[in-house]
Each structure stands twice: as structure tokens, then as C-alpha cells.
Image (tube, rainbow, N blue to C red):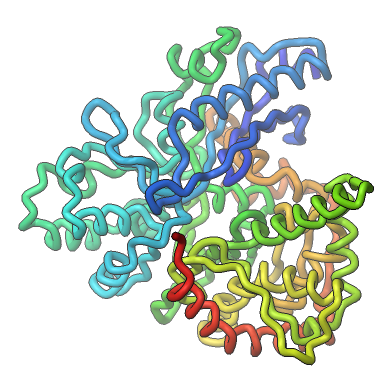
Length: 532
């Protein structure tokens, strides 16, 4: 390993996730050999979910520093050069810059649900679902709001695109991440020209000095040239000055694309579910969908194939909050317990609860959940007076709630669009406890769910794979991404598959019947409970 690192044959993937910036270094067999991380959290400022660019800078540097320290501890050497680097981050949102690359307004993340008017208008105009999270929704809402900064825009991008620019000076984006900014035409693997023209026509009376294509990043497919690490980029990532310039970078991607790569789910009829702070399912389509569904986004794989994406803003955050309560209780009782053990015990015990949670219902909405029709979040637990309110049922209801919005969207895919999927791969924090999250997902979707031993590596490993593929293409690799993943990464991969349990699936459906009826209470709470 030391020789491999010293010879610059290792590959680095960095993903800026919702709560953690993570770096993974991989070796010649594409397996992780070192890691680094930095914790961070979004902030609600002036009614908007955001991260500061100062936190981006500090987090990336700390993450790389911790990776370098891990390499030093494990192998007694330093990272000086690499075979390739990949940058990934949370998709969607709004980062708008002027001609000097000065940020015009604070970063508006995917978590904001403030663009309803714009998203609805664009969906009708394009006859194509435009979610509130998408960059074009944020841009058009800013126009509708007459925000003064819009006239000064010279470039908009995603968080991954911004960091990639800092490292390379290139204003580019992987097609998967770009598909969360503006609709993609899969035939040309680029923005849909008809919709670009339609948007320009829509705003022509505003007399802005730009056309929409001019301010969007260039679209690249996996394996294409996305630039190299500049001297300034190397110093930015590694202020110690040991990292050398000239390293290849792959197209920057969103966390959806890296999730597909990390679970080998880029072929038609394959799917994956990523469950962490947010949860989303991705199913690679055989053919275009028949209708426009507001609950389902059409995005792409890192090579431009169409994907049906059900994205939900809320997944494990409320579960984490309840675990913190139990952690606080253990300390109060003078018997503090390792928090990881609390997760494991509670998740495992939840599976002893009634299959329908005994009449206990939970809503995990810390923020708005468009799939469920709410613009803001009010976490709630609701039950009938005669419900069986036990710890097992309470925790099972919280596990169900983490996937309930996802089920709303996936039921549309299966029942109305007859979308077929051969396998579903699960990855993310929800699946770390064996016999809990994976089983609940299988019951919810009524389909087998596989979690590989690499499932916990997540998006940082996924973008490292895309970076490795870029390096292989640069060296003459002719295989497409799907074939390369099969042969170079997952040929001997190990995993465990869980089949849906008939009783569990019936119970989840019964839970969902009550869940859907109770959404009226959730919406009433949003309307009537306001921050002081």
C-alpha cells in the first residue's frame, strides 16, 4: 500500500454530504484503503437552510488533513500525488455567482421548500416534472421574487460543481448532477434545448444580460475530461503544500450518481435506495414514463440514462433525535451507554413490535416534504387512545416513518407506470443495523433488497469509483461504465439479500393507510404551529 500511494496510484473520492464531508482513498482493486472525515451541519438562517462557504472550505481542509493522518498512521507515508480525484456533493440547490465568482446570495440547499410557485409554473410549461429542489426552480423563483442579484448572475452550479471549480478552474458538471439543475435530453446527454429556449422566452421581458445556457455548467458524461488539479486547487485542498498539481479529475457528480456507482445500479431495471439524512430511490428506466408525476423526478445515471427518482427530504434526522433522547436518559440515570449500542438495540427491538406498529404513527418531517404535500416540517407522533403504545411499536413506527414518504412515490412507479426492477440495492446509515432498516425497506417496496459489504462506504467511495473509471478511460479503457463496474469492482462483491416478509408488507400497508389519513393533522400543525 505504501508503494502504491508513493507511486501516485491511489484514487481519492470526496463527498460533501448532509452531515459529514468524507474522503475515501482506494487502491488498485478499487477497495478503500484509508479514510478521512469532517462533521458539519446545515443551518436555518433567515428562514433558509444553508451552509456557509467558510464551512465548505474548513470542512474540506479538515477532511483531507484527517485522510492524510490516516494514511500516515496506516502506511507511514504521505499523499503527494494521485491517479485521479473525484468530487461529489448533495444535489440540487442554488449557488449563484457574479463575473468574479463572488457568491451573490447564501447557498440555498436541497432542503428548502420555497420555490413552489416556480416549480409549478415550469412543470406546466415544460410538461416535465420540475421539483422545488432543482436549481432552475430556485433561479426562476428568485426572478419571480424580483431579487436584485439575478441580473448579476454569470454562473450557477451545484455544491459539487463549485468545489470542482475551486480545484480545477473548470465550470463543468457530471450529467447526473446536471439533471438536478435543468432537464436533460438523454439522446444527446445535454440540457434539453427546447426547454432552454422555452425558459429564455419565458423571461425575455426581464431583459437580463444572459441566456440560461450561458450560466449553466457544461455537461459531461462519466469518463470524460473534466480538467486537472491546478496549483491553486492543490493548495486549497492541502494547505500543507504536499499535494501536487496535475492530477486528473472526473466530472463532479451528485450524491444520487455516486450512490448508483457505489451500488452497481447504472443498468436498466436496476435500482438503489440511499437512506441517511434524506432518502431517495433510483430506478434506471427501460423506457420513458407515460405521465408527469410531481412525486417523481426524472434524472440520469452518470452516463445519461434516464432514472426515476423519488426524493424525500426527511429520513433519519428524527430517528437520530429520538436516539439522542435515550442517550440523554441513560446519562440522567447514571448509566451512560455507547450511542452506537443505543441505535443497534432500539432498531433491533423495533422489529419485535407489531407489523402495523400497533396503531402508533410517526411523522419525521423536520423540514418540508413535497412528496407528502407539506412545505414545512413538524415532527409528530400520533396514536389512538387504545393503541398499543410500547417501546417496540414506537421505534418501529419511527423506522416506518423514515421510509413512508418514499413508499408514496414508489407506489406510483409500480402501480401507474408499471416500472420493473430486477434488484434493489440499499446503502446508507439506516441499513447499518442488521435485520432492521433493510427488512423494513423490503417490506415497504415488496421487493428483495440487497446490502453489500461495501454499502457503508457510501458516496465518497462511489465518486472514487467514477474517478478511477476516468483514469482508466484516459489510459485507453473502452468498456462502458456498467461493464467496467461489473468487472473491475463488483465481480466478487459480497452482500446479503433480504426478501420481503408477507406479514411485514401487510403491516406496512396498514400503517400507510393510517399515515395518509393523518397527514391532515401534520398539515394543520404546519399551519397553526409557528416559531415565535
